[in-house]
Length: 172
Image 1 (tube, rainbow, N blue to C red):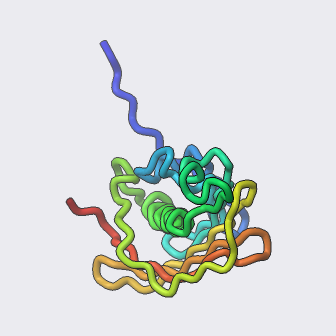
Image 2: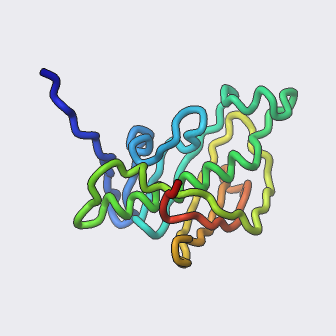
Image 3: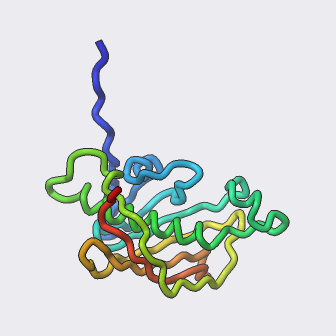
């Protein structure tokens, strides 16, 4: 007789006064994305529903490098935006998981969609070997939408910054 095993919840590690930290395994439980579209390696300083920081280590083995300037590997801007959007989803899901009465079920089922990209500026090429530091600050709720301010940098150099609108629920 087989026994059903309840899905494992992400296990946040709390950092003093900075927020929560989530490993790559935690993030896989929080997001519906999988390789090759899972774009963040870890999240930290996550203040659930408010803000967070994350890391994307850029490797020459990324599948998009095979066709995006193959003689001069450059991470596509849309992939940088996707990494920032996934960090937004972690911050959003963390709000549900870390509340006093966490929601039941699969947290990744609550991840919405990217609705809009505004004022996104790219100021540095991102290449294999770089480590992107991602930042997201959730803004105003507009019905089923939420505005978000995002940034990505490599070391002290800004790589991209702008605003996103994300849906706060998944339909379809």
